[in-house]
Image 1 (cartoon, rainbow, N blue to C red):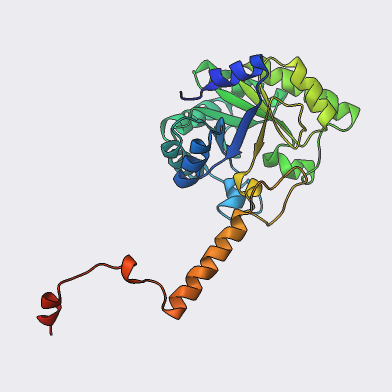
Image 2: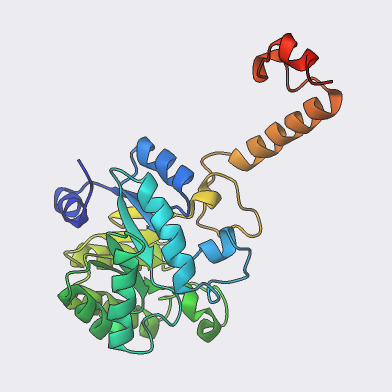
Length: 275
């Protein structure tokens, strides 16, 4: 059966861990879907992984719609969540609702994700009031990386920890169906996860969250520009791709590929009549 936000709520209630990975294209989404992943996030991390940017700031609505639509075509059973890119919702409630609607209509997402807690609660409420499910994102929020002064763990001080709790409670009250915790101490994430009624999805937040998410290219060893502490490589697809490419290069240069089994035939009579 197709996984939905109700699937996520049921998992939380029954104590079943949720699994999510990012995806940005049809073929990858299809493979991850067939593997049985619960949710796919079309993350604005595509700026780093797919487009080669140093951050996520430059990603546009058009980028997100394009990639989300491709993922949606490949994901038959998995819940597809799409990130709202930088400045697509911060400017006003009206912009937030309009752009969330575009991701649903044009990108074929089943839910959207936006960063921020107390400050973005009115956006979350307005979007959910329109019937669009929202996944919140608190802790380290990459779109605010310039304000944070870099990729730093959030919630370690008393003031930061209290802010994290306030943000978590605010996004739940605003109607978010789930919330991502990024780069926060495990004890803090576990405590707050136990207090919330909605599922918590951790990335660098420890095993106490209700589920986990990773960038698929990190988890599969396909992206090596930088590797966060919380990443575990579950495969080395990048190495396999390079080895296969080298084998292809070697065979083409040696003339051993293509062979007869890879070619099409034509009657000799046809060839004889050409010259």
